[in-house]
Each structure stands twice: as C-alpha cells, then as structure tokens.
Length: 394
Image (tube, rainbow, N blue to C red; front, side):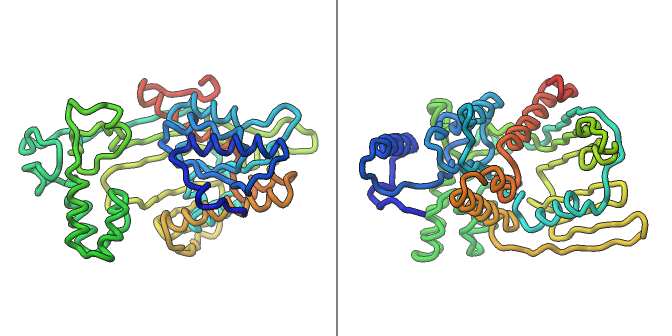
C-alpha cells in the first residue's frame, strides 16, 4: 500500500488528518498532482468520540475500536453515514475490534457449530426476549480503615486491600520483571525504562503515575478524559456491574414460505434458541471464557484451551485442542488485523467483490455489528428499568 512521507503522516489530531484528506481529495478531483494517500484508518479515539470523527466521507477502509459508540443513537448515526448514496454500492471494508471473532479457539468453535453443525440444532421454542439480572457487591463498600483516602499509595488500608494498585501493577507484574500488560497501559515508557535504565527508574515512573489523583475542584472534563490508575476503586466513577447475567430467548425464525423448501429446511440455522451470558468480576479463571452449548444431537463444552464435543447417539466425546497463537486474546488481536488487511486487498483488486470480501474475511457486516450493539443497549435497558424486553416491540 502507498505510504505518505513522514512529514505528511503525523497530525496533531483526527481533525487535522480529516482536513488534510479532504483538501487532498479536492486537489485530486481537480486533476492536481498529489502524493499517494492511505487506504485505511484505525479509529482509536475515545469511544464517545467515534461518531464525532465523521470519517465516512473519506471513503476509506475503516477499522473501529469497540464499542462502536456509547449510545444507540450514535451507533445508528455512524451506520447511516456509512451507507452508500442511492444507486451506488459501497467499496469500503468496515471492521470492529471484536477480537475474539478471530482467535483460533473461536474460529474452530464457530466451524463446529455453524458449518459442521456437529451438535445439530436447538429444539426450544421461545419469543425474542431479553432479560438482565445484575448485582452490585462488596466492591462498593469502602473499608473503614481507608478513611477519606482517595489514592492507593496514600491509603492506610492499601496493604490489606484486594484492589491495591501497588499490588496489581508493581508487586504482581513490574517487580517480577514484567513491564508489558497491564503495566504498559499505565505508561508505555515504563517498558523501555526497565530495559534500558533498570528497575529503579521504572518503579519510580510507575509510582509517579499511580500517585496522580483528582479532587472536587478538578475540572470534570479532565477527570473523564483519562484513566486514573492509582485512584481508590471505592472512590472512582466506575459503575460497571460486578456480577451480570443476560438471558436471551429467540423464537423460530424460518425463511419465507417456499413450496420447494420443507419447514425443516426453512428453519435450518434459524430455530428457536435460548442463550444465557454470565460475567463475574472475581474468579480464578481471570479473562478465561467458559461455555456450554446444547443441541439436538449433542453438546459442546469449551473451557480455556479445550473444546469438548459430546454425541448423544454414540455417548462418546471428542476433545479438540485449538492452536494456541501468541499475542493478545489468544491470537485474536493478530487475527483481527490480518483479516482486515485481507478484506482490503480483495476489495482493492476487485471493487465489485466488496460485499463478498466483507463476509468472507471480516465474517460479519456493518448491520450485524449494529444489531449486536443494539442487543447490548436492550439488555442495559432491561437492567436499568428492571423489566423484560420484547425485541420486536423494542
């Protein structure tokens, strides 16, 4: 892909980049001589700024960090902005940072379930309903020993606190020589300091970052625009649920009536389903996903690095051990980028194959992405209003 000269590839912010690209596009449209431009953009601004960036008019391939936006209205606004004009077709690939779509573990799991149909289909009948149950637990009860402390490094309860930033970032990781995740999230320079200057300077840099704090006089916009890694967890504005359960029921959704197709054919892959999602804050299996899927012919259990398939007819089980790729999210980070580039290359070679490339390499469409976000907003409404959501009415 063409690359810009260094002097033209560094911008103060996304607004300067957008202005440059718009100006360049105008010059190119006037047949002026312009330097090669970029083909794609990774949208990594703050989540609530995604809609504001408005990069759609540039017609570039776009990979957005997740979530796409923090409100349903912004998600729909982005969706509409990316729709082609009447009579035209889109020529740009759109992807989002759903990295687990691309981990070898989940690629195999998807193949077993959707392509091989190894456990058949579901037999339940239900309506499209979304219910959300949540519990806010002990994390929000500040220990009396902590008093009025707002920062871990000045808190008298730090040594006995489960959420001590010092324990998490320094004692557990940096002190053992690990300046990667999550230490480099606090400050990416710490990794270089440890490698070139030694542990003392790296530890001092970490301590400086963890000491950063705010009080009632701090501008709220400053508080919201950055993370505060040393802030007392009981004094933060984080209201994420400690324990959440989402239950989703879906009714049969057959293809439209067709005399040449039987009902079973019209229902293939579209039968009624019930799904329960449970995420909990404290667990031995931190960042490890476990699940079980029941079908008409068997069931699948997946735990960490293993997928077990049990066949009802033979009463036998087959265990799969997917390739363990390196990098973040079990190889998902690399897979996300690889598939995005492959989709771009396929589209650049043949613009008419854009939809095919989107489906083949990205695995989902922009509409799929919007619908998955909408489900999250429906679940949040169910939690907030303590009710069951009827999807069609919602």
